Image 1 (cartoon, rainbow, N blue to C red):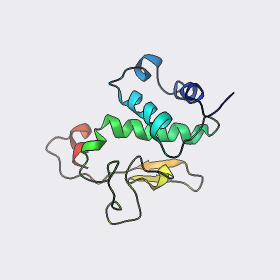
Image 2: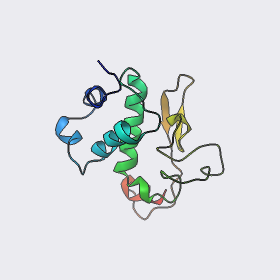
Image 3: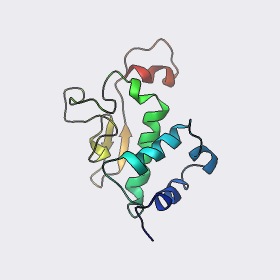
Image 4: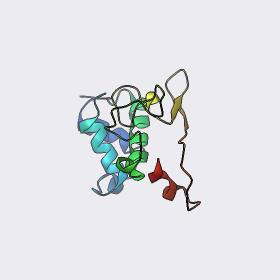
Length: 131
């Protein structure tokens, strides 16, 4: 069994997301799955289940909050984020280096923290596009 095949990766992702949501072309989960399977430079396979699930969940967060519209640290930004050593979301390399992500010494994501600009609304999704 090829642990890097789309079907093997999809099998792991289905432990986190219902199939109809994963298959919905408009869902953040579908976009995240497509990124993990077809675009992600890390090419994480099903045998690295913890890292695969973590990258997928963070990619779903990115797509679910219109990450491409963030003011900084969105995928494709070339400069370091916030003047530090963090890199934009969906960058190659460890997801622990993505802006706003802190991991423990085992590479397990522990904290997701964004510096949000003042928001007109108190509901988080209204604030996230200002990232």
